Length: 201
Image (cartoon, rainbow, N blue to C red; front, side, top):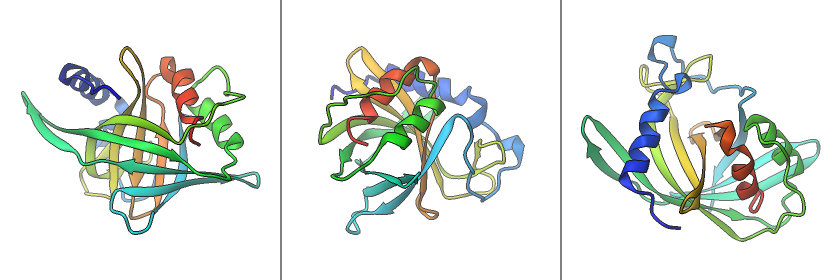
């Protein structure tokens, strides 16, 4: 995957700061996990072979289990004006025996995709770039993040695709609770993001 330029990362970060769901210090965040909403889908995560940067994601519904691996590479911190940001690269890896139909349908609804992919050509790896938006975050009842009090959530935005053909989606996770979620960034990215995730889910 081609690296995302500094301006793109900065623009994405600033746009996310403007999102109400990620700037909610005033909404009294708690340490409770977010129970999900119409614009997100929560799934389970667990370490893979005690690797510090690999987790197995599973989503179970209707007797079907979708499973995949998330691998997150090391983050590099840098300063841009008054903002300290961290970014890096990662990848999703497919797992044999996964049954992703229900997961994809629910993701399509949450990300406001117009259709659920069919006849998907599965691949072993789908790479992504990421920007960390917040660490040690707690969560408010409306799903927003805050750092007072500290919590166990990491808020992240990932970029799928390359060149000018890129889609964005939030990937937030709480390792202490074994939970993660995909959450909508912009409905314009819905179909593209689903088409990319379908290759490995």
